[in-house]
Length: 171
Image 1 (cartoon, rainbow, N blue to C red):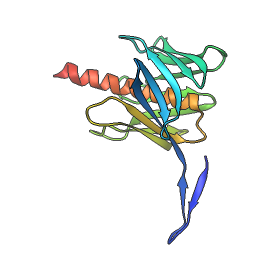
Image 2: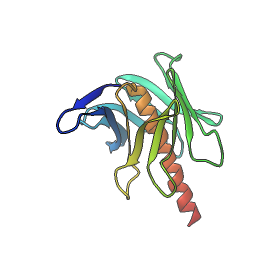
Image 3: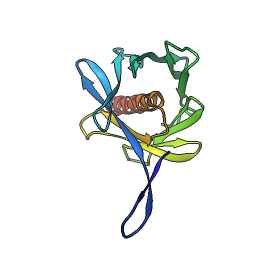
């Protein structure tokens, strides 16, 4: 994680983060950085929590394995990530990616944002573009690899889609 010193009246350490956002383009879901650079494209399966993904030119497969959601790099099957809900009663998800363990959970009651934790320490956040859309974004430190960030964004997307479906079923 890089830190930049902001000089002026007060010297403050500021964590430099990368922001990734999900956008719909030409039938695909596109993941881009805040500067507009596209880093991944997702071809989401209809009526399923699966997708064919290309991250920085490498094909990945996002799918299910029993109750877990998994990501497998097709070029290197040993490179895999997984996410699962540790409790039926809570919205949070545990994510293992590379050598890190993350947790994504709601920022609070009646708040549509999520917090991202690594090793129990809050390192990022996730929100959505506006009230009317389900286009999530995630901000994580720049030491999180692009495939890890894309998978975290995918899990945040699934969390939002599930919450929206649940709210609609309740009405």
